[in-house]
Image (spheres, rainbow, N blue to C red):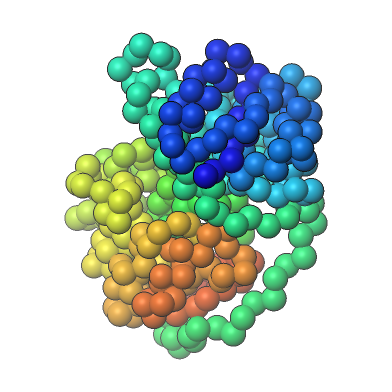
Length: 352
């Protein structure tokens, strides 16, 4: 039985959430809270397995409460929030840096066609997040030493034309860290599949743009894929590289249970760019991307998996390591160093 604490300042929304969770035989709502201060007290007193956290609350907000819980009594936290003002994007994604595992939209109003599926999505994700083992978050985390490399960089590697990144649970702060570390004269295009709740990819792009030296945008059908630009997979569409190095968005069936799928991206990148591609697989549940990362490696491209010690969930990278798809197994800071070296234009490099 999953012991759940529901934190929500709206009495109406709180009642809807409690009713939805209690209807699932695997969940027991052990308590509710209407503020961050109440949430902290309830976590200490009730020891829940997972918390759903409202974001905008009077007094201590969801960011502050998340940070406090993760630095003292860490447990899985899922942010549930309404439609955000674009100016709130930075604060919301900082909650994920503080340790929140996922951001979900509040359920659609009762009586509307979207209510039942929106509630079902929330319940499903909360059940999945309850299984994740989290660690204490402190303001100044000591870096984890890197394990030995799983492979070596080919002597003739680069210049790269594209870097494809796949991430899921715990991924947004790492994607931000990677983009912030890439040089302004990046000679490769960056394509990103980040599994996240529908409706937040635009906010994700705005948040990434605050620290990235490269312009970040949500990919649209037919866009030219250009070096030095970052393209995010939009809601509900696979992101692929089409003919003429153009963005190709499809609504083909989910791959590995998800759409967009990192696997679809890696597959198209391997076919179009071969040895001039890099694939990076970051923290996340499941196995999305692992098989198709191997395609990039088999064609001579550079492949990287995040190491176990730095992952929130080692599922996706772990599967890549198991399949020998990753030429490198690195912590985030070393992934940044490797990519920065590979994407910087080189004097005398062959024309592309």
